Amino acid sequence: MSGEIRKRKAEHLELAGGGSVEPASGPGWDDVELVHEALPEAAAEEVDLAVELLGHRLELPLVIAGMTGGHPGAAELNAALGRAAQRHGCAVGVGSQRAALADPSLEPTYAALREAAPDAFVIANIGAAQLIPQGARPPLGPDEVARLIAMVDADALAVHLNFLEEAVQPEGDRAVRGCAEAIAALAAGLAVPLIVKETGAGMHEGTARRLLALGADALDVGGAGGTSFALVERLRAERQGDARGVLLGSLLADWGIPTAVAVASCSRAGLPVIATGGVRNGLDAAKALALGATAVGVARPLLLAAQAGADGPSRWIEDFALELRTVLMLTGCRRPGDLAERPRVLAGRVGRWVEALERQPAEAAR
Ligand SMILES: Cc1cc2nc3c(=O)[nH]c(=O)nc-3n(C[C@H](O)[C@H](O)[C@H](O)COP(=O)(O)O)c2cc1C
Image (cartoon, rainbow, N blue to C red; front, side):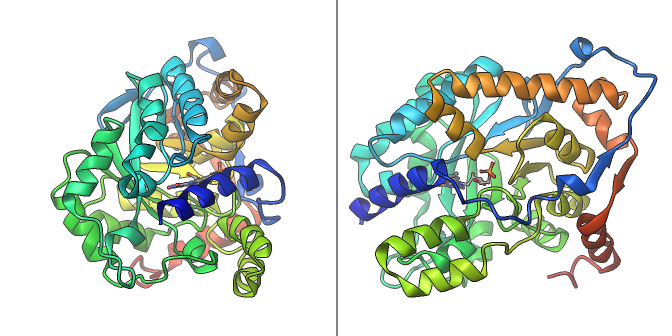
């Protein structure tokens, strides 16, 4: 099994690093307008970008979203992402660690990230689909979860919900029953905070409230409009001549709750929200913060930056910080948290989604 996972993880990097994996519909930032403040309170260089996430101070509201590990090329990428996180004081995640549980010789491809980022807020990663039985394969037990946290000396564990991807993926794990109970059992015995994250189809307030009740400490909304795993898996299905994956990947390329909508909706549940999915610059991030996010997550742009050169992720983050600082100044803010108190206008598709979801009780929105 570990050989299959290894190959898939390498293909994900290759395909996401190419083109055509982001849906035309977009994450919704164009429909979110921030309102200019003609009389600002702090110059851009006086803006303090630091935020607190799960009891840790981040020097800027950025999580380098988990992407990889488990194949030979992954160590270099994880080390580059770790170096950037260490330098800028942001959080950083590894990709799914299932491969290293199956084959411990792959552990260094994940541990490379922590070695490069001894002081950063590091997030371990596993799929919710691995917490329940999948055919004859038993679910992961508490000892295995403890192992993957220790592997990167993690400050938090992200459990990813990727049922769209599993549905399209030729060899996907299709069972779903018992996931909620498994998340609750995991949360009850976990030594670090639990982040539940979607990976590109988003979440709404009803799900956010259920996850809060199950014991999640934070949510990463993983909304639609950035990297689409329906599109990534469709490309893999095409290569394998898997007609089923091509059919579903084409149909569902645009499926999901746009990230801007997911942030606005989930922020009402009372958990810290990380806004991932199509965040491409500091202006997108400012819009996510205005909608209630504590921090944003970025994956594919940092993969592309790392492919362009070892220093790429660090340079990308420098530009991002400059953009965010400038927008905070222009909206009359001194720190990221101020944005949630500033006026904003929701138009078009996002305005309609947010209005419709807010009219329904959270439970009915299930
Ligand atoms: C190559 C690649 C691999 C990924 N692997 C994982 C993973 O193993 N676990 C996970 O939780 N998310 C994974 N993701 C999803 C990202 O964390 C993120 O939610 C998603 O890419 C949306 O962000 P983006 O639009 O900035 O790319 C992966 C993303 C990419 C691009």
